[in-house]
Amino acid sequence: MKRTLVAWVEDKPGALNRIVSLFRRRVFNIASLTVGSTERPGISRMTIVLDSGRTSSERLAGHLRKLVNVLRVEDVTDCPAVLHDLAVVKVQTEKETRGHVMQVAFASGARVVDVGPRSVTVETTGTEESVDSLVAQLQPFGIAEMVRTGRVAMLRDDAPSSWKE
Image (tube, rainbow, N blue to C red):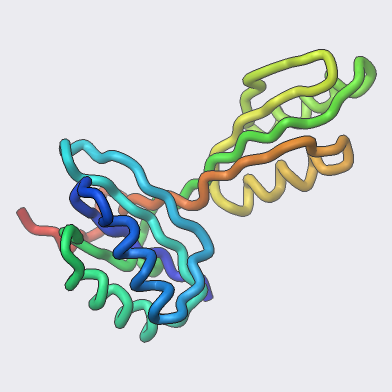
């Protein structure tokens, strides 16, 4: 089962290395890892997706909390949360197929971000399943290049949070 952990960490050199080393030492596979800035200067937010059971992820979250520079860790797997991925996909096209690729993108809620003589590049966000679905629809045209962010997660408005200021 995939578990989703969210960790808030100080923006300090070596913080990401310490966290990833913890996963390596404990022999956990990271399915995806995203890191970005937050509304608080000097603090980054990490969304970590693991192939793990509940007990193992709870133990790992406990170890994460002990690391220097880690301020907070939450397992949001079973909480009401918004879980989204971002993908940018460059699809090979010819004059005859360009319009059809663009129709597939628009029908899926994706944006066309670049049109070249031999390709169309689309950007999509959504659940992992919706991104996978668009990728599957574009596959027959020929995907030249693709990049995905991995999952980002945020608790919904009514979801309880363990971080008390």
